Image 1 (cartoon, rainbow, N blue to C red):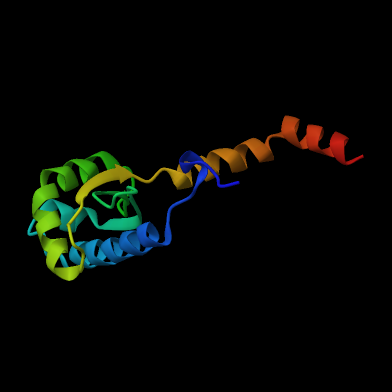
Image 2: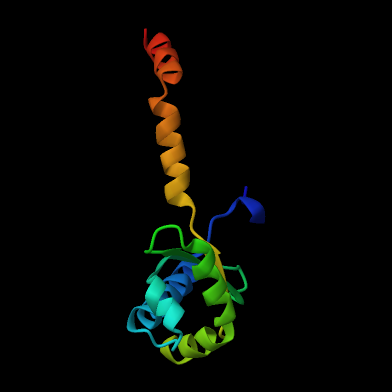
Length: 132
């Protein structure tokens, strides 16, 4: 029995296209090709790029290397969204250049929250009870 569409993970094609765009985007931001001094000052890191199944939308998860400036990073990237898309296009060989959306990566905060929960004395006590 085949799994339904909703339960499948990303295809090999989606993963490859996402990595190509991630590399191009990271290179553009690292070199400062956007011409936006705010983006250069904020030093943006591209964590991951997820592609839609039809490869028409690329969602780039980014993080500012300057602490607590994620909102400024997102604003600057969204302001330059179309220009950045135009910079990515010649670097990536694709039939159609996807629309690039930017989101802040929250994986580090989530993992820190889980670590804090697991280090909580109440949780530690409960974990010890189940081990016995």
